[in-house]
Image (cartoon, rainbow, N blue to C red):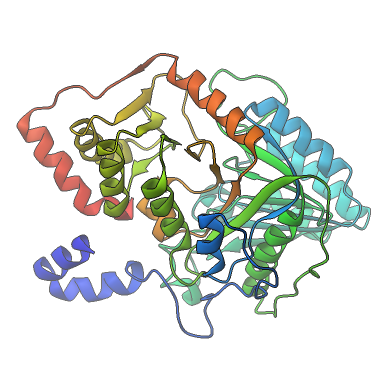
Length: 423
């Protein structure tokens, strides 16, 4: 909000046009994607405070009828994903922010083509900005489309219909096979994220595979997204319980199509109610001011607050913009681990031994308040222990702190915070 007020004072006439294109977070007119068309939850929430908070947003409560496998190794994630694609019998629905043409996507596209020719219904949602190279040169998609694969670019740039939504990007990662198996997390479709063999420069990231009731929540979100793109009514799956395990999981979508800011509320609530530990891993750290203040309060209460983020991400401007936030946290004794290894693209939040949040959302303003995102909340002890172990292994490797900065640099760093919300 500060950036818009400043812009309005300095450039009042340009501000009106600029705000029209980039200032709107939620769309309200009926011809826009203003609300996820999901069923009203039938069952009551559990006693967990997060479950009750999410239920108040008309989002389905947690279910214990799930099985989730967490992958911290890119080869394992790729192997499981490819195996699932090969086993598809009825449908394959994929949605990603980044799709790049390389050896990984060539293998995936070949499988999608094969399945489409076998009669499997294949649909693909790709963000037009995140995959701008593929959007501008769509020839690699021609064979898929000719075989009946539905390929849609979300909010295409050269479309008057989307002219006011260019700043609201589709950052969800949803990979569903036969409406029974779900893959999600931080990984997009590219060799940067996953692959058959080890690559030195591949990013550190997370993916999970899930079966059970959680799949329906993701199916409903995907169905709502693609129905919007085709101006159709959303067709939802029935609510028959699918019992395949005992993991307690909950899906939480967020973005312009979700009323309110449930994800931000859940994170704030989790920080304020934490008793021992708040560990967060994120590739980009440009937090909302409310989250920043909540972390400071948690530190005053003696809670172990740690932020794990790459020393050098793939966005130098974002790295510069985060510096003011990090130095501010240093002043309150909060440990910000600048990982010196490869790029970290994983997104996860660990609160005490009670809650694990993982999915597509970074801990930055864009993910929390602008983009279309989706996360899964796990209350299962084994997932919490696995994530704690993985985070600890990163903390125990080489990492550093920001070097002392001159007064001039600090002025520029703090000034960058004014515009950080649009990065």
